[in-house]
Length: 277
Image 1 (tube, helix red, strand yellow):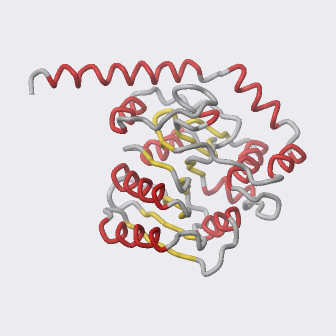
Image 2: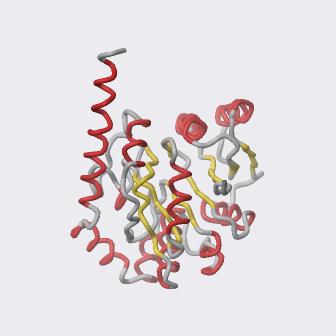
Image 3: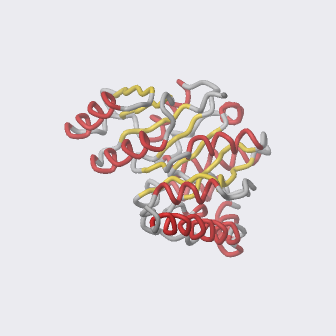
């Protein structure tokens, strides 16, 4: 069996989000998976206690590092990338909650199509990869297992997105090395730096794909830092029209409808089984 990608989790300052993220990560990821919790001097005393308790009990092969002083979100992520060399890496947002099977499905996505540079799962707050409604923030799924099984039942078509999205993304290491590192001097947020990275990948022929067989929940959408969108628009003048075209034409509407149908179908046998328990 091929080893799964390394999971990178930048530790945030929101203790409750960190606790929920780590619980979901442990429950939804195969035992022994390599996980790196990297703290850019963000976690406070309660956050450190949450990390310590989780490290002592997790089934995952996890490590934790903490910088003495913060270097900033983008520079910190780039340090993590550099340390991983040309390995494929899955980066989670600090408030993400991955559903069961998420990493296996993302890894399979890259294996199926060597032209995919980034694979992004569905998310309730996933912008262009949002389910059930495009571009809207919905509550996280109530039933993680049922949602994950519905996603796994989807046909793996992997359509192209305008860019990868910051709730969770699996990045092909060889593609990332080809286009160079993140631009920490121009962007203050991972949200914007990921758009820039995605567009550089697309310029060299890589695809930024939707992995419709995986789902990672989140409390809300990522946000750009001040000035980030101005930099994106100046450097990539076709970005806004590209995103607007995708949102207006909604080429993944049928896929969202299929996922909704799969979710309903998977629920039906469960209700029937309960009658005989």
